[in-house]
Image 1 (tube, rainbow, N blue to C red):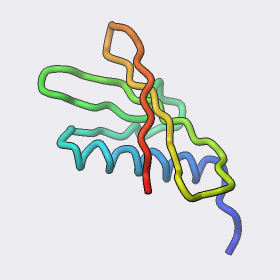
Image 2 (tube, one colour; image 1 turned 45 degrees about the vertical axis):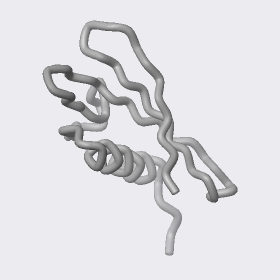
Image 3 (tube, one colour; image 1 turned 90 degrees about the horizontal axis):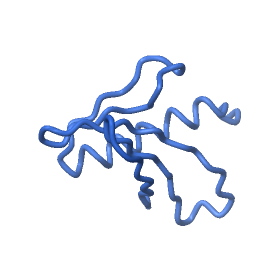
Image 4 (tube, rainbow, N blue to C red; image 1 turned 90 degrees about the vertical axis):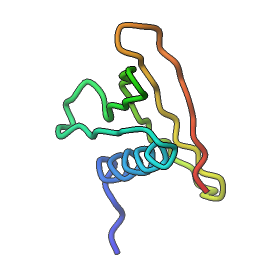
Length: 85
């Protein structure tokens, strides 16, 4: 099996973050273009958040953390990280 490209790894991690947020009850929408200003849009009641997922290399692969930024529309940035095991 060939090694996945960085774009493929990034897209896979975006889906992992989306699935994690959906399992917590959020409505999640995925960008259709790699040139979009964010990777995901999340709705929480009447609030809209922009999500930017960052993929990091982790050679240990035991406790993978995928950092992502939550940007509330027109307000301050908040950095969050989810742990996927």
